[in-house]
Image 1 (cartoon, rainbow, N blue to C red):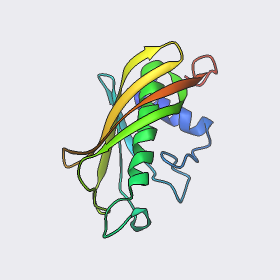
Image 2 (image 1 turned 90 degrees about the horizontal axis):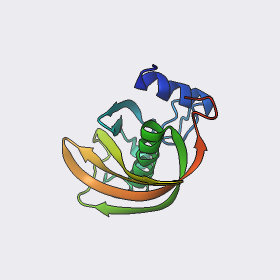
Image 3 (image 1 turned 30 degrees about the horizontal axis):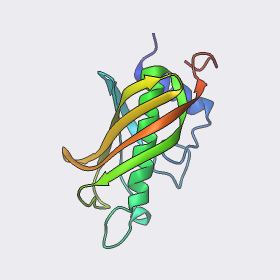
Length: 149
């Protein structure tokens, strides 16, 4: 049985590691990494760069949304071995995130009904939840059937 790190690496290679959010080969992207998967919860970290800011050294809300959207998709990947696309995503911004913060995003799969996945997650800095998200995701590919997992 492959480890979580091996599964993540296999998927990244399959999709050429160019994803804007998690791709290691995308020089403009977030470069989310250090993935873990435990008890159904997937997490990853990233450190924003100065060009990810909104105003006054605060992380742009769109960057926070991108990171959360990505980790919610990974909840489906690692829990159900499926690729999915965003149907809807709701967010709640609780506190500002500073551009020099090391950010952890984490998510869990809350429910699956056929091709529909419901997931929720949060963006965390120093164990404090800064942004929350939940969404409906639609399965677009079975990664086992495709031979990726």
